[in-house]
Length: 206
Image (cartoon, rainbow, N blue to C red; front, side, top):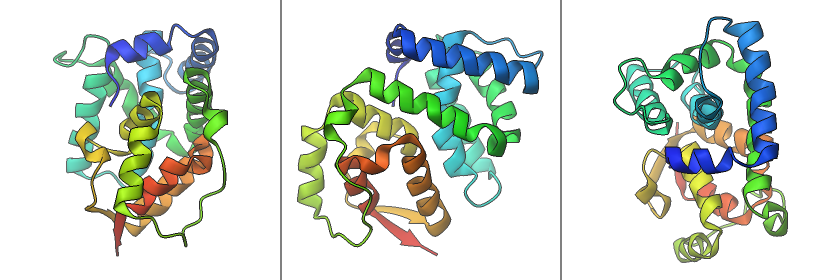
């Protein structure tokens, strides 16, 4: 997943900074008027939105999921992994309560962030086709040949640990799987072959 230093680097890109600031201004004004959070930490909150969406796929967030979300949020915070009152963890509570209202706007900023961070357009090819079989060998090779930053995005959005990106044994609930496809579509990952392959590495359970 991303480090605070990578978050800082992306926030130096004017288009990402502008999109983040505009969403932050609206979100705080309408949903969290007393929230104090730096722009970089708010971008970290935006980066958390796919993970939050996955956790909410079954309609509620379990205690285990909440702990995992808080752990990831602390890692993304600017110098705040061991802070007692982490700004991203605190702000995430507002995002969770208003997720259905704001998720598309958060995903739109991530779409901007990906296109501004690397040449995403050059690797967009086709819509996701769930009927196509993908071998584990093909997937591993696709990961190694993909832009580093793209893989970092996928890991940060959908996995807990970086080393899980190349794995042949992953289980996921049906609702979570469908939510992952939907989030991928909202962000624009559904047109990226390595993400299509990534989705195929999951075994769905009822």
